[in-house]
Length: 415
Image (cartoon, rainbow, N blue to C red; front, side, top):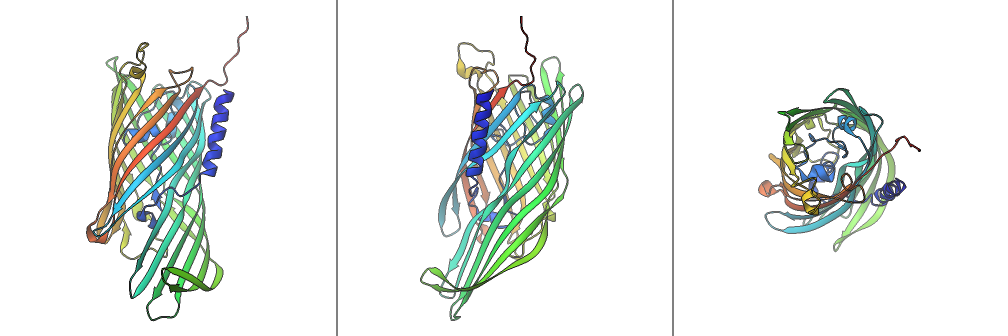
């Protein structure tokens, strides 16, 4: 147990130390940034579905799942993403590597459990600009919005779990915009630093039952009400000159901008899955987000609007032989999934969508090899379009994670 705790502490330290830019997508310019968290490596490898729940894995998307836990579970994950962006005229490549989540789930009885941890939520990372004979523009931004959460799940009757989660959202984002015109002596730069904070909630229900003494049916629903997040703004206005390909500061003035409130949209997800326990599972999910209520920041261009977002996901897993003694790889869990998301962002009249195909595997590790496992996942996807002067992104992600199990609160027996 001590070794497991040390691993989690090291992971927490890594999470703090690697609070680096989690995206380089120009689409993170809009709203509060690009939503980056898609669940644990197990979830991501199955198209992001959250309907599946068992007794040894933490489901970070549905707090009702804590009621299923029978072992204390520590989980941590990291993701590396390579992105190839293109317009009708040019191409660019960028990459990011981040710690994705750190979480602990603890059962307190055969019908209840709780969990806590830290995850990223939204991320900003972009650099956009134009240099012509007539105008110079440069827009840069970075930062992230994170969540520290505490969730609780309870099983009031056999097969039915309910749960709730309180989230503290916090983070910092910066953005800078520079404009200089030919024939005008000075240009301008506006630099904004925004500190976010606010509380939100997530509620979930999960149901599972056995059909025909063989097949397992699982169904779930989660709902996140709309909430507000407070933004404290600090702004610097500067006079600049542009020579060659660089800016030169002439003078600047600092002042506090008015405090603002932004809306975090509501979200409803329903899912249904069928499988054979410890053999295979397949599920479908639908999510509706109320992103039409998204508040545009002052520097968001007029060609950007938000509508309600939807996502459709299919995924599952297969285990060749869970009890195999002679073949280690037969005990591995093989996962795959597909997802299609309407992000709710419209640019130049075009809907920005995202598509992804994922697969991965979980392999037993350690002395408790029936429970603890290491997970690896891969995803290839596309985001955006090159029509209407926009950007299309092709991305490939590699995810690594650990799910370690231990037993707490067990009674010692002496002969």
